[in-house]
Image 1 (cartoon, helix red, strand yellow):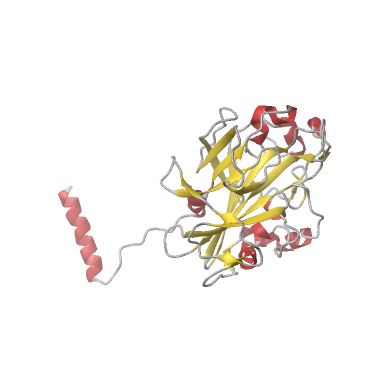
Image 2 (cartoon, rainbow, N blue to C red):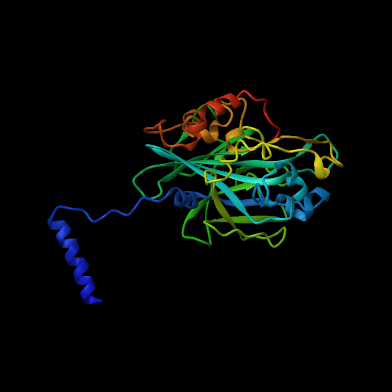
Length: 341
């Protein structure tokens, strides 16, 4: 051991004498960045009513939970597979990383007969903005969440970012995970409709599940009140994955909108059941804000420039953005009418 140490010391001395620095640690991969900043997620759960499936309708899971790519049978097969997964993408400019996290439920549901509509498939999420500052993972500066057809903006304590065209809605909390050494931002979803905001703006009311991020472990909740469930992170741009399926007419009714119908009892005992009513990230839209449909995910630098006043520079040119390969189709899809979600 002493001999090895002398060799290492000698090599460092040689490098220093030659005016050379020791090799720098490799920059983290996009998957590592996504894991570092992935949310700890509080999911409120309702066990009442036939459409709740004893709470399983509120568990996050995969869009192909039933082993197929048919979006029109997910309501019917809800609850059969509740292994937890969250989809992510990482876009990059010279100054920032933009991390999108997409949470999927097979049902957007209600348990009363009054004037609300439920629908098959449900996709909401959050975009986090991380500033490059020379550290391994950068510094989290802001987040914008998707709750139905509205966006909500948050900043962590000490961010330094302030109101732009939109008023900041609150503080983004961070918590320690029992499964790694990092503090993670904390998000939360309501039961039934699954609007997503920064915790504790939606909090667990009675039953609920707390999900923690992992690279590859996917656990199913043991029941409606499980406070430690690991979710798997899955790249939106993975081969054959969510983005690759964007033109699959069995899964999507049009670009950015999941296909859904009224089979399986959707709408029974309630006001109605909507069809084709859930969005992938490139379909998210807050219709009265500057960013166009889908740009929260496909051009998040525009979102940042609109929503916030950013001290220092904000590069709008992407060094990594796979969405750009479909720029014309995405632009055309912005003229589609809004979905329910």
